[in-house]
Amino acid sequence: MIAGNLPEGRPSGQGNSYLTMPLSTNASQTLNSAEGHPQSPASKLLIVGAGFSGAVVARELAEAGIASKVIDQRPHIAGNCHTERDDETGIMVHQYGPHIFNTDLEDVWKYVNRFADFGPFINRVKATTSNGVFSLPINLSTLNQFFGKKMTPAEAKVFVEGLGDKTISDPQNFEEQALSMLGPELYETFFKGYTRKQWGEDPRDLPASVFKRLPIRFDTNDNYYNKKYQGIPREGYTELIRAILDHPLIELQLSTSYQKTMSADHVHTVYTGPIDRYFNCSEGRLGYRTVFWESETLSGDAQGVACMNYPDPDIPWTRKIEHKHFAPWESHPQTVLSTEFSKETGEQDIPYYPKRLARDKEILARYQALAGQEKNVTFLGRLGTYRYLDMDLSIAEALAAAENLKRKPLI
Ligand SMILES: Cc1cc2nc3c(=O)[nH]c(=O)nc-3n(C[C@H](O)[C@H](O)[C@H](O)COP(=O)(O)OP(=O)(O)OC[C@H]3O[C@@H](n4cnc5c(N)ncnc54)[C@H](O)[C@@H]3O)c2cc1C
Image (cartoon, rainbow, N blue to C red; front, side, top):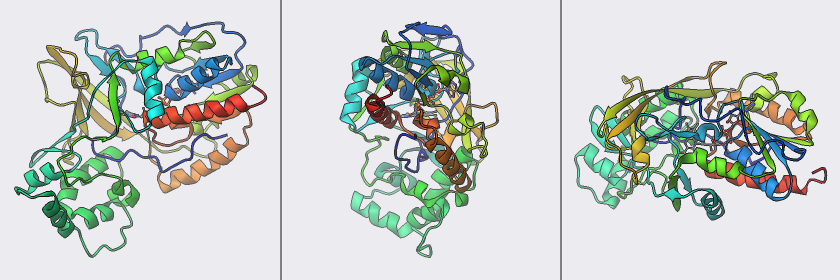
């Protein structure tokens, strides 16, 4: 059984390149190998993964009186949303890359606010290029600064339309789509090098649909996500997920990798790990991009903003993250700056971004067919369905999956 409705699922580039690997600080020593509420009454469910997807299902079922055991192969909860205060500076560090909660889903916003106090945060991404520092997504201020003009919104719209390459009537890939809409100068400055670094693919090999989702604004709105509800939990995502998991009917076991034999002790399994690995990659490996970080502690303010992108192709990193700016309600004399590098996912790497190239989709279809035959397993979440999912959609899909499970007579 596969949860969710399988949209395209790829983060849409600039300022949205959620990439990572643990910092070299103390990422792995957060929790004991078993905690929560051990020995909860005979858990009917086995939940693989203590990220948002697994935690929300466990909580919903627990509130319906159904016990579950949650396992995670990592030594901490919260999956890729894991946050931890840096020992030296006290700064909350987003260990697997920056996470900004953004949603238009009122129910999901209410849900997370049950478990954590959120501080307001608006992501205002900047890009350092060889021509200067600009605001992203491309908006009226970016256009006026880039072209040295004083355009009104209406003038800018006409101007940008005039930049597009009219010889491309039916764009077949990311590059053609970008050129047809923006012309070469904006495309090469902001998108070409960044996309190549982020995905390790020539933009001509990426679908046009990825570019179509990138916002270009003709007002000065630089609110990246532009969603109704946005914020960051003041004590971090790990505390939020710890609160979700804190229920007498939830048993938590960390540093535990899933083996199929474990399912035999449970009526049903909810699997939020990579779908290809569940089937021992029998149909081939699905393509993921992964990232790694180099972090440094500095004094003062390193870049004045939380996210700085580097689209130039000659610069090996994709962006720099300054963690303390994700918590503007805090004040720290020092700063932790993390530089992000993107690469292909090797066997030992943590998979981050589903690439979803044509080959991947063919392989995925075969895994989906196999998953459909697993009657007592629900595949859920970012990895279980091989889609890029923001946190709000992961939660919404986990809530829906829990409702389905509650209706199952075997439970
Ligand atoms: C770097 C990065 C930045 C992001 N930034 C944002 C953002 O700003 N805003 C936003 O809304 N979303 C963001 N996202 C998306 C967000 O991380 C996901 O929506 C969320 O993590 C999905 O939760 P999940 O539980 O499905 O997956 P995960 O968080 O990946 O949890 C899956 C868990 O399963 C465990 N697991 C896997 N295989 C096994 C196994 N065999 N045995 C035991 N355990 C296993 C893993 O260790 C992991 O803890 C970002 C994603 C990434 C990668």
